[in-house]
Length: 290
Image (cartoon, rainbow, N blue to C red; front, side, top):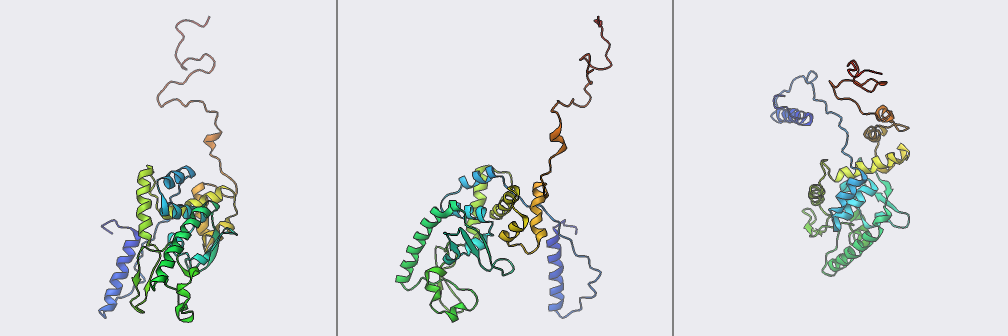
C-alpha cells in the first residue's frame, strides 16, 4: 500500500471493506485473487539477567512483585493478574494458570524468591477482603455460569483475585458490585517508566519478561518440551523461536571468529608487515641487512 503500513493494518482494512459491503447488501465479488499481506516473523525482544535485574531494581512494591512473577514463571500479564488465591501452591512451588490462551489450564513455576513478598501481599489483600465483607461487598466475578451453580462462591477467599483492583464496579447485567483484578495498563505504564529509568535501549514490555524466562531456561539446558509446557504453547515451533534468539540448537553454536588467535587485524590500506624482518613488506631496507 502507498502508506507503507504494516501487514496487519492492510488485512484489517481489507476485512473492514468486506464487512462494509456485506452490511450494505452489495456484492463483494470474487476474493480469490485478492492477495492478503503476509505478516513477517519477528524475533522477540529478550533481556539479559543483568538487564532484568536493573529493570526490577527500578520498580518497587506491587509492580516489582508482578514483574518478578512474570520473569520467574513465564506467565502472560493477564494470566498473572487474573490469578485467584486458590491457584497458588506455596508448598509445591506451583501456580495453576486457569483459562490461558486457547482456554487451556497449565501448571508453571512459583519462584521461591516471591514467597515472602507474595505472602505479605496476600495478608493485606485478605484484610481488604474482610473489610469489604463487613460492608456487604467482597464479591469477585466468577467465570462462566459458576455464580448460578455456587451462589456464595464469589465471596469465598479462594476465589478472590491475588491482585485486586483498588475500586469496585457494577455489573450491568446483574447489578452486583464486584472487585475485579488490577488492569493491565497499570503494569504496562509502570514497566515502561522503569525501562527508561534503567537506561535500557531495548523496547521492553511486561511480555518481554516472559520471553526472557523462556530464553534463560533453554540457555540453562532444560528440555524444549518442558519449556513448551511451562509456556502453554500448543505448537512446538512457537517455542523453538527462543533457540533462534540464542543461536543454538541441541548444542551451543560457537562463532568461528571466537576461535581466532586474537592477533590485531590491520586496517584497510595499511601495509602488511614481513613476518621475518618485521618491517612493511615490499619496502627496501635502506640501512642494510648486515
